[in-house]
Each structure stands twice: as C-alpha cells, then as structure tokens.
Length: 186
Image (cartoon, rainbow, N blue to C red; front, side, top):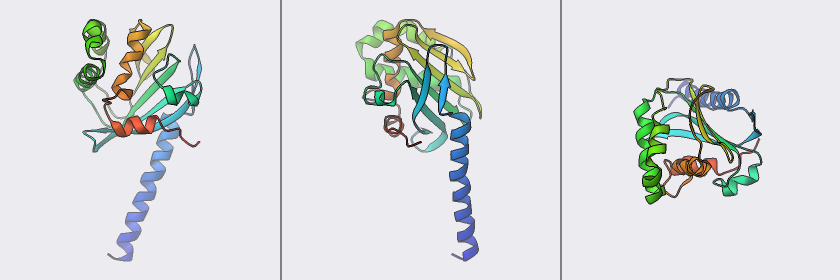
C-alpha cells in the first residue's frame, strides 16, 4: 500500500470519527430540559440493525447518572434514538413485540392491548429523524417523533416495563445495552 492510499484511509477515519463527535453533540445534547425534569446525558451508543448495519445513535438521559446502575428504577428518564437511515414503522412495531414477549412473559399477555395501541403510533423514520421515549413515574411513558408526541402509556408500571426492549435480559442489542449502561466521560 502506497503512502497516498494510507493517507486517504487515515484521513477518512479522522473525518468519520470527527463526524460522530459533531453528530453526537448536535443531535444528542448533554442536557434535555422537560416540563418535569432537567435530564443529563449519561451514556450513548451506536444503533445497529442486524448487529452490523449502522442506523444511528442512542443516548440515555437521567436526573443523576448514578441511576445507570438501576436503570429500570422508577425515576425520570429519556431514551433518544437519532436515525441516519430510513426505517419502516413496522420494523419498530415488530421488534418491540418480539423483545417485550421475551422479557415480560405472562405480563406481556396481560398488557398486550396497551402495548399494541402504543406501538401503532410508530412512524417510518428518515435520515435526521429522532424518537424520544420519556418515562416519568407519575405520567408513564410517552413516544415522540422529532419533538411531536405520538402516544402515551399512562400506566407507569407498563411504561417502565416497556424499556425492557433495551434493558431487559434479552435486549434488542447487547452492545447497545452495554453502551447505554456505561457512563460516558464528558
């Protein structure tokens, strides 16, 4: 490999790494202020489809990053998913059902109607779109696309259980789960 080829490869890697940093800073701010809480970005990770196809990034926001140790506790939190590819609505719906059934067992059957109604709100996303899943112990779980609220699970217990898609024993992505449970160094 010649010097010119090596220089091009290194330049490409530097551009990719710097674009991740700029992307993360723009789309995944260090703080999100909601009407109920001021949440700090505690962690972030890469979103991949089929464990290999890059589709975007996710970040977890909490009041206090110490809560990462017990992410499924009944404390306010927000998961933000920022997409760099189009994804059809049915992909979100099908993945949610699959991982909730795996993680919730019989509880899924009891909550199926509520979960399916919530899942119907998912829409197809395109590059630059973002989903927020916001949990509050008094209000439950809400789903928003680009800041527009689409659906709510008013039952806090069901809303918190929904997060098992990403944090349950059978998570959608073990790599993403590990990244989201690892405090970032800001």
